[in-house]
Every structure is written in structure tokens, then in C-alpha cells.
Amino acid sequence: MRERKTTIFFNLLGLLMGIALLSSHPAKAQYTGFKPVADLAAFKKQFATESAKVSTITSNFTQVKTLTALTETITSTGKFWFQRSNRVRIDYQKPFHYLIVMNGDKMLVKNDQKENRINVKSNKLFQQVNRIMIDCVQGTILDSKDFTTKVFENEKGYLLEMTPTSKTLKEFFQTIVLQVEKKDYTARSIEMNEPSGDKTVISFTDKTLNTTLADALFSL
Image 1 (cartoon, rainbow, N blue to C red):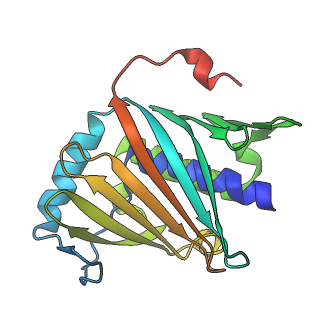
Image 2 (cartoon, rainbow, N blue to C red; image 1 turned 180 degrees about the horizontal axis):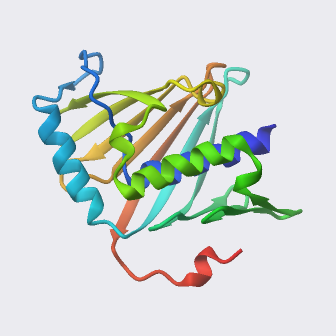
Image 3 (tube, one colour; image 1 turned 135 degrees about the vertical axis):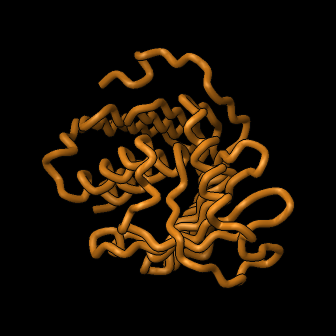
């Protein structure tokens, strides 16, 4: 179950890095330093325009996991690659090695002991996550019924609070909070809050966009 949750988590991470999930629900300010976005329609239009310009992303990441059962946090670091369409590679490098590659409807999960190959079509949860990713790439995510989203802004960026509406996603996430840079509309951080009270925060650094990525990165 732990491995399954980790796999789904990073698939969602991949799609969120590509294009944020949006809907037209009104926002109420509740984040320090942020206010509801002034013109939601204009933001959606600009966000879609900027997101469509991104064909690849390469980024370092730091993940901080807070477990309610423990008094300390667990920190991991690694590297992330995204390529349209439906290609994601997440490489945990410290404190342990853990690799996830998603290429179309196929997935590879690998650590030092073993590797698993998964057919996304064989699992309803994987199908749902894959559908969300496809919606992102095709630009139809604005009509997604999988989340309701509140959008906030400050001088440097936007904050999207996403609440799952589907029963399946609710089992894994209570809310997902995505912070986006105003300068290029890429993700600065993603906070995933689970129903159990556990929290995972991913911060992205050293991002590069639209560079050529080798096919071998996404080889299964």
C-alpha cells in the first residue's frame, strides 16, 4: 500500500508540473500574504497560453515528508524530468535511490532491490491519474470534475488550492496546494495533505524549460 501511494503521488506530481489544475470556483483569502486572484478568467487564459509553450521541464527537487506518527520529518532529494506527452521521470537520489518512469500507459517503479512494470490501463486509479495528465496536455483540464480549485495571488506568484471531488482521489489527498511562479507559470512548490494528517511538500529548484531530452530517460 505504501508503494502504491508513492506511485500515485508522483504521477500526480508529474501532471501538476506540466499544467496546474484549474476550475472556476470563487476563492476566499485564507493564505497569509495571498489574496483572491483579481481576474480569474484572464488568469486562466494566460496560464493556458504559457503552459502550452512548455514542452519539457528539468528540475531538482527536495521532498519533506511529515508523518503524524513521528516527531521528525523525512527529507529526500532528487531530479525530475517531464516531456509532452505523458512522459515523466522522477529519480530519488538521497537518502536512497528510487526511480519512477511513466511513458504513455506504461510505468516502471524501481529501487535497489526490485523493479515493477505496471500497465496503467489495468488499474482504475492509474487510469484516472493518466486521464488527468492527458487533460493537462490537451488543455481540457479546465473542465475537469476531479477537483475544485481556489486561486490566490501575491506579487511573485499564484497559489492554487485543489480539493479532490472524486471518491478515489479523496482516499489519497485532502487538499493539494500548488504555488506557481508569475514569471513563467511553472511550479515553485506542491504541498499534498493526506486525510491521515500526513503532509508532503515538494520544492523545485534549478528549473530549465524546453531543452532536448534523450528518449533513454523515459525508457522502460
